[in-house]
Length: 143
Ligand SMILES: [Zn+2]
View 1 (tube, protein in one colour):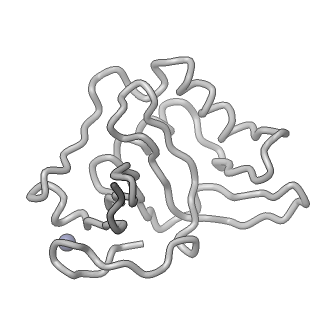
View 2 (view 1 turned 90 degrees about the vertical axis):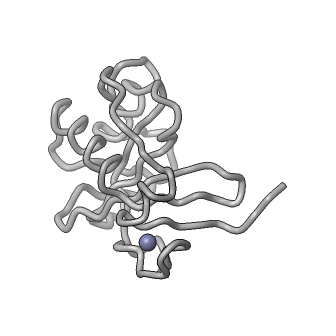
């Protein structure tokens, strides 16, 4: 079964039952998470598009993920999967295509927020998401 994609703004998250927290293990606790961190800091030569952080260390990365879990907007896609988008108002990194085209971005996407062992984040551009409204209050999604 599929439904329409849904967005929930930071103000409505808790009332709507979307409370997501650092479970205490941090966000570099598993080989899967380490691999994602490496990919999004050093780049992956086999990927068609690389999304890379600017100057982030292990502590800063885990802090950024925790902040996004606390403060970001929730996207529930048509398959019921959740992602979190957090606009941080300063450059987070860039996306680089195989042709070398570079775009600076100032947001963060957290993937798999419901799977503690696989939660990971990467820089994401606000322009990549069209304007959205919160499904609860109708307000603009800050992004
Ligand atoms: Zn709302």
